[in-house]
Length: 487
Image (cartoon, rainbow, N blue to C red; front, top):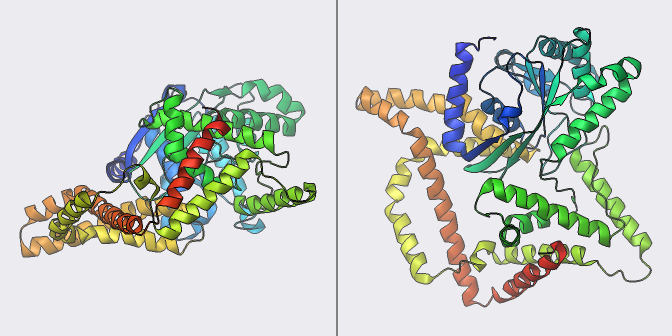
């Protein structure tokens, strides 16, 4: 058994403390028993939706070894010190043609060779076969690098050692903000040895078949929302009252995150079946070589619209599922224009309770001002950095990464010096130990302020009669969705 270095264990526990006590509300690790024992040649293949947080989730779930990770290569070029730090954590860079260019890709052979040697020697490698993260709850096309690494590693053992690939699913309740829920699910391990003979004769065929098998294993576990044209509308239905009613009617507990995950998968599958049945032009978005997921989605939406226009002979009548989604789009636009929150249709604000809530927030304002240090820096600096990045899926990465590596350590040093000089060292240490509680209080206080503002906005809109139309639209949507997904 290879001993895990003490510095690595200490750093991992530090990251776990920050991420699990502040960032995540709840984490469910399922099927970890499917991971082969430490010392077994293993490749963990995961879906990729939330940038660094996917790798972090798997790292925190695996406690008996220090796995290697194949990650995007551009982060290694930020700073030489950061590059050495990432290497010490077991990360290996992979450069992509459509991101870093052909010249950078020449460096991949060194990383891939190191990864294959590690697997051949019985270590664990984590890889994301999609090659890049999606910007929503769906599974992209897989690259063949994962299968090639597995089979090349087997060839280094003269095909005498078994190598396993373990499919993994990461699922998040949200990609934005904190206090999110996470499921890390390990699927049944897939032995690579049945492909050894085929690999000797037809290596490309073996790689393709193995890739398809692994993708199938992951596809069974993930929530695969393939309809990019109406992605936001289907997310509204899935996450809102319609999804909760479907879960309850299907025998699931809507308040239990893992159960709701299972229900949501069925809900989306039925919606996609309805889309296929009613519209021959409907197709899911696939990623093409050299194009981003976003570009492919836009391209194929245009193709769908062109096909619909060519098919129409006169005015086209939308099928029921698409008509419903168009009405959801109109409803969301209506409540956005009125500044309303969907949840308030079910929990109608009462003036007395809103006044009491507002008074309580005013009473807590001095404590909220005290908690601005270091909360303001911990929340707003990552937000500011993320606002400058085109890919908004990095929000969670910056929230965890910047706080773990820079903001919280720096805040602790400043607090230690300032409070010790003004008061005592003991008081400074107590203040630092209270950082998680301070951060959580400030977060919940800010959320409560936003909610209270939304409640006042609702009361104002109701007094002007602006809630009647969207409420009628919403009731119609909730009734019609039952027919589309059959519950």
